[in-house]
Length: 96
Image (cartoon, rainbow, N blue to C red):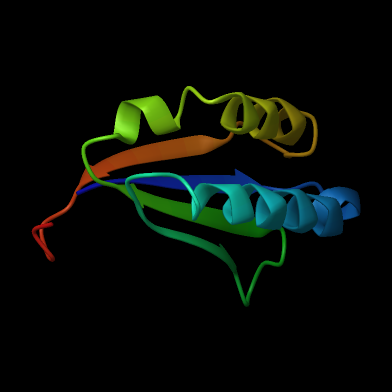
């Protein structure tokens, strides 16, 4: 399993928009072949801190090259207060 945690520090005036666009991104991700999970979470202490967790099996590279993913990244770029941080991880548990 391969996971990516995308941390976004969202400009306050764009928080609702980022959540809506990320929710739409989520709806496409969960239908992709090889998608094991896709979660969108928001910090309780800092509403501008939004994290997307995507987990894939072997198809991880292809998942991040799709048009809808690249479009989501492009849209997000102008709505975040600072650079988006993508943390790529290898799954330990569960093993699949």
